[in-house]
Length: 450
View (tube, rainbow, N blue to C red):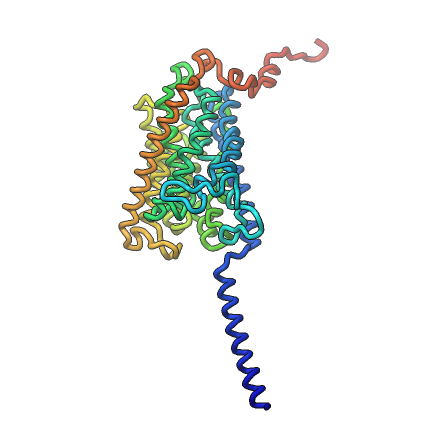
């Protein structure tokens, strides 16, 4: 009896052990909420949201004082338009479950199926992921506004933002980031938006400048940065928010996020210095606008690579991108395309450089989920990156041209000559950025008892 009981207990313990092992295996295979990752992603989403107001300051400081409100409003209106559209249909077009190679399904329209305690993306609640991606979708069309400031009607731009978000951004995001997307399946690497956001915005800005036409000679000559501290403030907010943009794309508080954080800062600092070096090599003084621009170029270039490359590789990316964008700005004056705030030179060119150099410097020692790039002997990755870049250039270029032409059939794209000369804050918003300051300067000054 004692021997039988011993065997039963032993067998019971063995069975219990096997059951526990099976339970542990099942739990490991089931996604589980991680509060640390969730907190990290909530902060990251908030940081990315801050980038759009930061962009408003960056662009707003670059233009004439009489157009500052309109320029800043082009960024702020994107927060409203895309913020709503993303929840209604944009998210499901990009990431709807069960989509095909080209577009997400409509299963998540109106964010259906994304709420509830069991709705997770990895280790974070699905609503956190939706919100994080919404901030990306918002800043992408806002970037385009820099190419058309001082001459595009506000209503036409708002309609363009809405259509561009749904018909260009969402499909491109699906192609590159959704596991159903054809560029994702092909192996295109874009950690945080080099192609989806920056090349796309740069190309769209260039096309918009072409369709709308250059500013009037009088307006163009008068356009100097009216508030350089605004430019520096905007660049600082962008730099700060970009840590959420890039590190947050790891979708968790982990080693990849830490690497993305470090490479982001290193590339940005390098590009800032490289831009100033080019200014001085050309016999100029190092400018504050140049420092801010160089920093933004570095942020753009490292975005597709930040989770795949080493900090030392990010230095090379920063130097190459700053050099390419700097000379693109110098060369643009030879063409009649009036990309007012150099959206293509700073976002398009730097985005292309970053996307291609991702194919060179991506390393499986940094991120074990990839096969690596040229540094790991995988030359095919560079070819794959070329496919991603060329596809983005073609799709976004043609799509933006068609959208602008269609909008032009419904309403004028451009303000009148009188409005352009006078500045379009009053015409578009019936407000002036500096009315009180101008009034105080024109008022008589009373001294003593006079």
